[in-house]
Image (cartoon, rainbow, N blue to C red; front, side, top):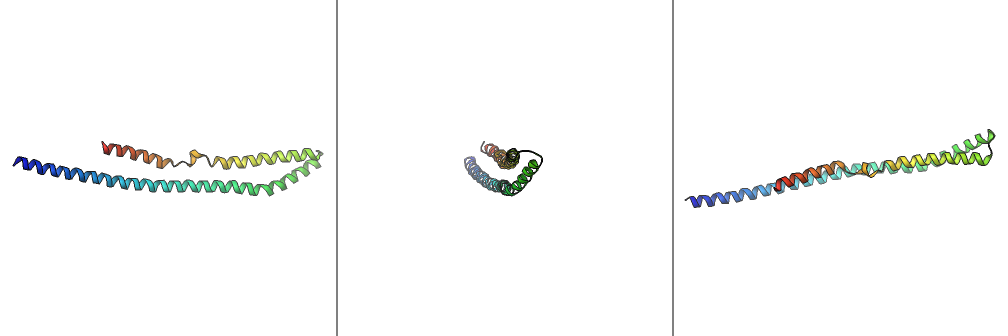
Length: 138
């Protein structure tokens, strides 16, 4: 009878092992789906940040033109009234406009820095999950 008991025990162990393996695969599937959902949420957030940055760049580019034209005309007129020659006053106004435009573009581009837009939380979570799956496989 001990051989039959051993066979039954072996069959139960096989069923238990296959059930454990099936449970592990099920848990891994759920984990993978959660990670995909996290990645979607994080990438959506990053896309929103990019949209705002592009909006700021576009808004700055559009709104700076009329404002700077009026400001530069006023500055040039003031410099001419103060005794500066007209070409020098226009050049000074142009340099000031170039500096302001450069600052606006630099701020917008800085907001598009790839390091700020990377899905750090998702990457960290995938690394944790990879380590967990490696532990399950062992």
